[in-house]
Length: 172
Image: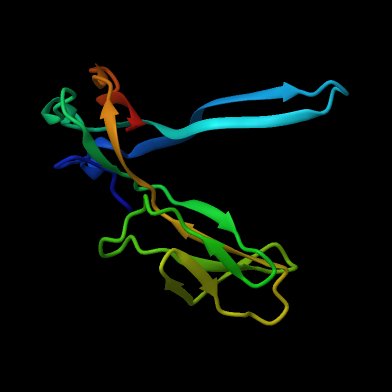
């Protein structure tokens, strides 16, 4: 199981038996209209909001997170990017590279299965090795951002012996 880490706090496995991660892009964007009515997309900035929630048998220990300081949030849930026709995808610089969290690639096969395939990364461009019969390819990576953390919430249920928690991180 991959672990989520916020600053120096690694959420323990027994505190995150049921973990959910939601990714949402925030940004200053609008659609402007020309005299003819044609739409023109204008985007001035874009940042990632990550909401992580979970539950487990023990508390997650999130009180140790200093929400008055920016923190590095290293996600334990991967995100996929579809490759172009040359089996390449541009990876964001905001990704984990620590041991066990390196990007990898899948070939998408006609029977709806996937087959892991080697991936070469030069700078931020990932190239998946070809697999005979593949319909497409995905490169997967674990996001890692520097963020402001909202004060985490937590609760517990003594009758069910479970603890629940949630935190929201917004990229700086």
